[in-house]
Image (cartoon, rainbow, N blue to C red):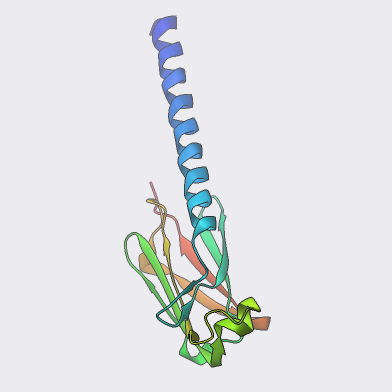
Length: 142
């Protein structure tokens, strides 16, 4: 292999890595701009995704949720989390404003896109203290 070919191959590898990072940053920016509620009566829970060499760990904060109603479903490209609230919460209770008093929240619901290397066929869900839900999604091998 010539020096030119080696440099070109390395340049292409770096370009792909940069594009992946830009895509990740744009996704995070888009996610942060979404509202945390929907007029259909659902709240979007706070969550964090940790990327480890062999798995993804998603921590979801379900404060005021009835964790016995928790449903976690995984498809090839999405993680769907849903849980009823212990009691109905009004918009004004959450956001401290009289606007939207008629909007009432009854559940948490959110869909989280999964990375292409996530293996949703073998997820593990655990409810930690303070209603923090830990979801472990292994990465595909090879």
